[in-house]
Length: 49
View: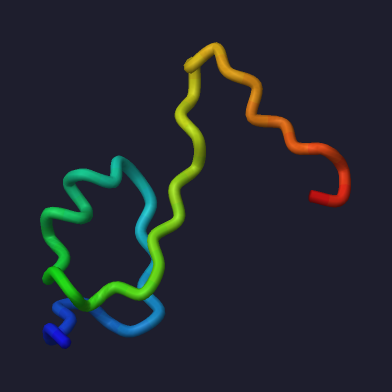
């Protein structure tokens, strides 16, 4: 596993590409992305999903 170049539990906000370019590869367990805005898509899920 690659050595992380950030503190454990770090949370970033903003555009993912610039952030991900600064992270050492192989040292991330989870990346969460919100759906894009202004995409004219309905991202609603049924209640209970």
